[in-house]
Amino acid sequence: MRQSLLNDTLTVSGLSVARSGRTILHPTSLEISPGDRIGLVGSSGSGKSTLGHALVDDFRAQGKRVTHVPQSPDEALDPLRSMAFQWREAEQALGLQPGSADQKTLFSTLNIEGSDLRRRPWGWSRGMQQRFVISMALMGTPDLIVLDEPTSALDPVVAAATMDLLDRHLGSGNIAMMLITHDLGLAARRVSRLMVMEDGRIVECASTKELLQRPQASASKALVAHRSWVELPC
Image (cartoon, rainbow, N blue to C red; front, side):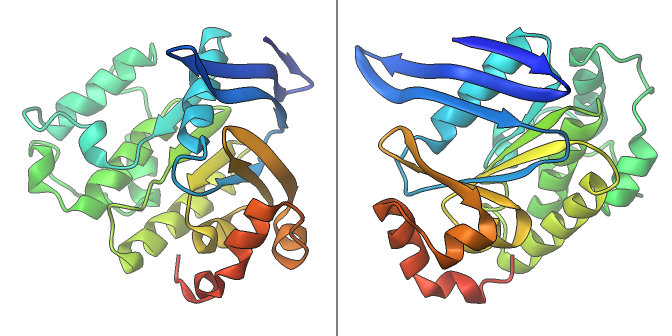
């Protein structure tokens, strides 16, 4: 596996993952340009999250600025620590000076300004917790943010509002986004390129419009065939 940063484009070649002697991610190559909006979709167990974690780990190992937002804020927040403490911990992890991250702008963008940072996570709503996690992921101005089912723990209205706020922030810079989801409706409204995974392989990659109108792989056709995704608000 080889990686490089060429003309500000993140590239990976031959990335694979094996566990207990079994290949769960077959050799995968892709390019991510500044500002890209990529959706990684597929059924449960297709390898989406495995690829996402592998990309995050390997790009970080190469010194790239890549952040990850998990499915639930419970995976990112310590229930026994205040939100202020967790913000400081994130700054330290990124090598930032305490208070140097533009908390005011990020909180305003994600509509959590004025929240009591002395509280622990359970003192905030689930939607506010997830927006806080997203703000921590954005504080270092990453090259790429990987969101792994970021709204599955939220109700549809809160999920849509959260994604709208994130879209607005990302649109002001060159941060690339990879949205990992089994929800084609969510991806269709948020990304310009779709990659479909099946059995640990990317079986199709095309513009969102092209894939939705003319899916080629059987896995893509199965996803598109469930037309209920058209009505979802996210």
